[in-house]
Length: 298
Image (cartoon, rainbow, N blue to C red; front, side, top):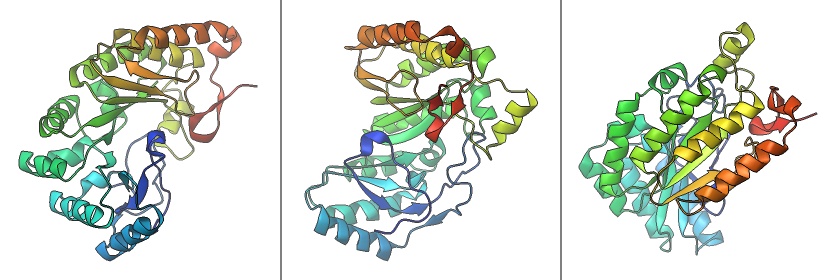
């Protein structure tokens, strides 16, 4: 298989075949992210994609889902994505769905007809980094889109039948505005009704521009307790019809996962009980962060 630079996938894509169709990230300018900072964005050659599909067909002929990498494979034109999808079905006839990371920006350039065609070809379950329901936070994070643009493009995906998961970054608004962020996140999630919500904590890595703000004291990270309370307050406000709540990222202080609305009370109780068991000295601290933002409590 052809893989260039770092390759990431959502945890829930563990059973999917990863096929590289782009290298790096087309935006690569979010103030919190360093995942692809040293990787130049490129598109993969069709001959390399086909070679990988032949290899996958030999090793995993019964696979049912393919996940296209890297950072925002949906940036490719609708025509290019359609060709790739057709090749996937040619080499892997058991594949039912094709997922990938996507940005709101990637959707804007595709017509309604494009989206409908891609859905017909099995493209579904896009993983989208919304991060926050506050416009000022999206601007601060340099996401490259506004909340209104997100609303419009997510509605277009839903109209075309393309499902999506939304990533929410707890702590993205900073410690002064955690409650405002929790309320706004719940509002946009209730409005858009994603198929899955993926929560993780803001973790400031070396090289991320937001780290300079933390060091200068112009941005204040959530305390460990605020991270959990922000998630809890968001969860309490969610009114969803059929959405997986996936709070199992390595950075999450208290791992929780379930189906909403069925498991809402259970998840709330788990967060409340977990919060009550954490010593106060940790709740009020900013613990050292390890791999992908895991809190290191000493």
